Image (cartoon, rainbow, N blue to C red):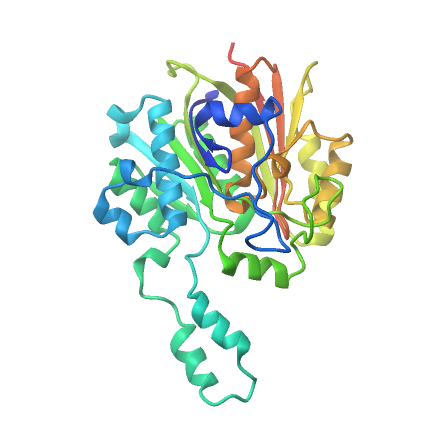
Length: 353
């Protein structure tokens, strides 16, 4: 099996875009928060992004914001790795959520009484599989291919946090096995959507009230973010940023989470002096408690404190921050993640030889 190098990062979030803006967070820059717009739930809002400079007007008009963000971050990764001339051979792996809902219709349905006239018709006509292409999750991969001319294979994974971790794992293992020469993988998530906030709030998953840091707070604070990474065989990479020496994932019923996390941690390479631990845990009480118990110590960084929880993009973003830590001199970085409902992942980054 070939060693896998990470060669490019495409980052966009509340902190801004690019490596420098996100490295600043690791150096103590304060997180960006909006505690008023969706009160009582704070969010980490997306910084202004010049989508129109990277996405042609015709495609931009057909996309929703979560697609624009993913397409934009994918382009940043290609530029960061200097791979624009090799896009014809890049294999794409994307984690994506569902499209944006018709919030006006949602409000009408929630406000209606159960026996209200016309409610059944409203449900039948409104809550149907949409025919609007921007709603389809696999259109993110298609839009990346169209805008950036990425012409290799394409895979879309749907399934919240575990989809983001699996996208990274699939892309990396294909490089390691020699079935792919260049991989582009990642995800994007928009927190500033009433439908997303409603979904998680109704499930009791969101933190309410003044912002507090993990692990003190009980609940998620969502954040808008996208992270895409490029992967190449270490021996062929002209400028490796970090070596992805290990990645593993698992998922199952919540009751089995502690055992699965213990097995993932047991399979890690030996810790080296000076290792940094970055947790991408959601902030949901049970999963966060189980992850911290498996790590056995407080992580050096919670991505949820810096950028909020970005669901599909959480683990890719944690891995990207780990690469920045390697670039800043860390010899080894452990990245962990536990989804708010299911899905666990660990990855180990090493400094290039």
